[in-house]
Image 1 (cartoon, rainbow, N blue to C red):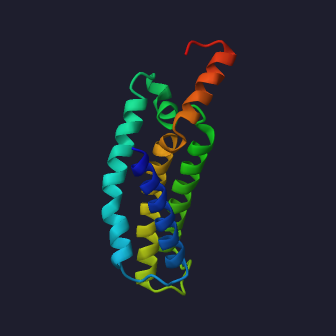
Image 2 (cartoon, rainbow, N blue to C red):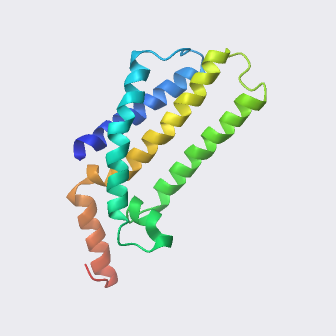
Length: 152
């Protein structure tokens, strides 16, 4: 699962580069690199969702999202919310206004597509981030529970 987490981070960086290049008008069609990002998302996102659902299995319905994200759920939640808001606002601006009017319609489409993929890779990377930390993250969680008097 660690290899999938590393691939999720690589995919996140690739989709971020794709999005940045689309914003400056350098990407106008889906090439081989973009196709790899599109096809590679599904073998990464499905295990990430599986890990998140497994992690949230015993949690209460209101706390399932925090259980999926792990014990320090503040920054990942804000990061994903900010990314979703950015992509939504950018999508509305591109479709309903003349924002980024210097770009052609192909580049504007690439911005929307790459923004969606950016969100998907962000979700996968955030859900699998505990796999990258390995035992250190889990030991820190146990240590925090011990210091607060909770059962481990």
